[in-house]
Length: 251
Length: 292
Image (cartoon, rainbow over all chains, first blue to last red):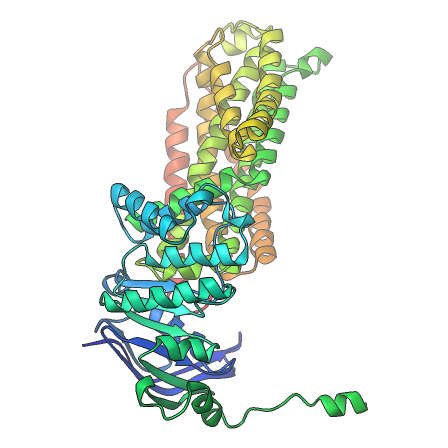
């Protein structure tokens, strides 16, 4: 069964006068099956974040259809089965790590006892138990990332959307996150992740799609690749441009 | 509903940690406390001055609290993108704004109770020569002023000590201690007729604050902070003459020691459809994409 399905999805952002400013997605088709670790890759501005926001129901498409667990992405029943880790760790700075997890447990509709138990488990898992009662506003980027990751897992989602999950993490923590993602997938969780670190994506993902200018330019199973994912990426995103340093220096 | 109440709780927690809310409460406490001391200068009816200063602190302070707290909490969610994390769960954007509104209302209750209780203490201190107008209230001048000052100073000192020695959050601790001191002050030689004289008209001021709370929350959901704050304050300023005429009407005055319950009920009944209308507009506005 397809957990996420996009059919011919287009999205154009408009200004106040409804004039089109950016065509973020152009007829995108995407299907993610249950239990997959799907890598959504592409250069900056290729439409990855827009795709994720459409899947989360934060944006609606201009054309095409988006389905999450065969329902509209805005439906409460579909969203209950979803966990989301954004690219930057958006946290309430006035809350402690424990309060943050309890807040997201509340958003997931967990009862108090379950919320407390899962909070304790996740604080232990992310090695934050010692700083659980410190305000997250004072956390390092890596610690904040671990709080955000724990927040995305507290509802035990069936689909986990990870936007640059290793952003801001040191190599040890990056390795731990990769291992965690693989273990979560083994337990049956479906994972959609974006990453600019193609080696990491190749280690973790089972299938991938490369976006450029809002269109899919390559997709397939990672196991079927002849070379590395990086080579495939560079070949697919052909119109990349080098900075014109020479003309700047000459001027 | 779990998600809704989680946001309500987090919003109330956020405002209780906001130095702006604490400073505004302190300012309102100072106005209501020291206006009670003005009778020393023989300006006129001291009880009435203390009473109206307290009501002004609740009305003006309440409006400022409602508008600024609402705009700050909603814009902070949008600008820090924490709203995206919340909306990825099973709550709609319009329900999120409603939950923020309810959270601000919960924080406003703390502000209202603190300033109202303190103004009752201040009126008790000023009640001299008021036998005819106010039914012979006993004047407790010195202790009332001392209690008012203690309500301002002691919470700050104790919260600082709690922060220094026990790492308890200063602003939240000071805000809750202000409420505790203000309520505890009522226990000293309390005259419950004051609850009617001051408490009942104060209750009539709540709907205007609640309306501007909803108005500012909805605007902040679509406009940037400066625009939402500016429009909300402009609307409040334009409506103040109407509000003033309403609150100073003869029907609003306590009648022979009894509360003007009919007037209070009318105030709530008039404000309710306005609040509902604002929340309906919120539902319509938030069916579209985007934060701004």
